Image 1: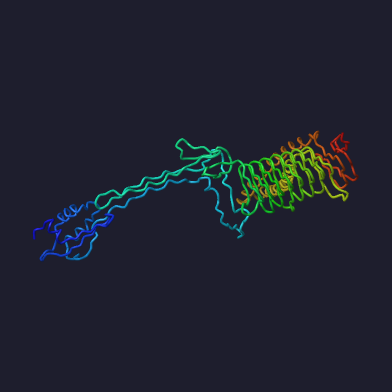
Image 2: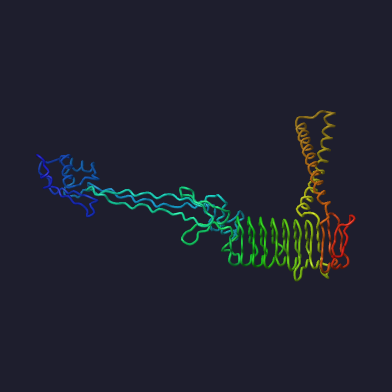
Length: 470
């Protein structure tokens, strides 16, 4: 049989989908003694029908080689190319990736730390906050008849710099201009704020706070919570058995009810109304307006308790230079210790190295005795290899201990030299000072057994002396 386009048209039915995306072919009849259809002629036939794209050549070839197998069956012989939409641009929040999720995490003992559910997005000056990645353009599709199918381009992400942030020249990276907290405000502006503020009480919805700037809590800080700040900490309510640690100063408008489990530490100054059963350590000055009761309080410079009450009762207070109050002690002779003249940190260091010195001397004594025994053995019978190794080890210990004892002695001398300058050291009371007190100035100690009033205690002629305040 001699094939022609007209002959193919008489036996084939072509259908195109409405969108011209799919083409099917149906063999309606097949002339007798025909076993194949010319492949090239079939391609010409399809082109005449404007089917030029997405032709499945293998399927067309199968159809042409064995048409009888496909008689009265719809065969999909061409498919268009779907458009590929572009990918939206996006922003990678580098700073927020450092913050742990709010999921409940158990510690090693299997207990959940409810105080640390949330973490602040802290960031340092010059640190990358976010990076923008570009969108991509879409790739158009095409119908089986060669018509283009438009694609949708990806949407561009937008970095909106807010306060204290900087964009790079390419405008795809945003950096922090200061230390602070990353915060996204209205209209998706990205800011870095130097202050982290809690509008009410600190609770489990907020959790512990660890912030690179200043922390402000407008309410109370209950038992168990922790606030660490590289700046100041300002609390406008009470602080109970909580932990506050600041590289700057700490201010508590009301006071501390420590329950003997609070811990307060500031590298600068501290100010509050009262301290009860507290543990407060400050590098410079402590100011309390009402009372310090049954607390352990240390200040590198001075402790001042003056106000409508200005009362110190119970506990232990240590100041590098001065302790001032209206009243110290009470009529019940409650045990109270006041120490001045030595920076409390130096007192702690001195106690530690003196304890270490005692332990080292004990160890040196044992090492010396062991070496004497080995030396005697070596002169009589000689030392086996394991004893020689022991001897070498003991000699090394002896050298180390001697070196460390020398270092301790030098440091003790430095601290003692600082302790000798007591010219500015004093304990002062504008009102009454009751019996039951232990006063320490430098290394001198005086127990108060009678009541004093309007008095100042200083070192004079090598001993603690009471002087009337002028």
